[in-house]
Length: 89
Image 1: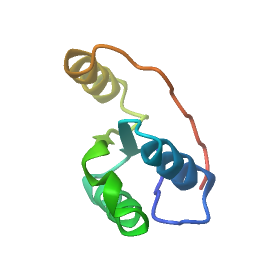
Image 2 (image 1 turned 180 degrees about the vertical axis):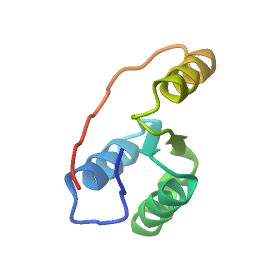
Image 3 (image 1 turned 135 degrees about the horizontal axis):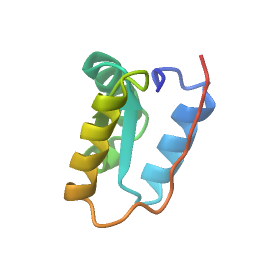
């Protein structure tokens, strides 16, 4: 999970391009603040994607939290088509 606040990052641009093409995007971040910043920057870059981007907040070093968040996501969504793992810093 990383900060997507930089328009120069690969993760930020992948999220933007997927959302622009109609994908529902869950923006992963360690904190709600980081996710909110990333979503704000995406909305600023392309206001028409505002409803298609949601936060997915979890600390990947906390396996109990990862399990809880993924179980919650599985209850909310019937499928997951694309998973992009980006290990940028």
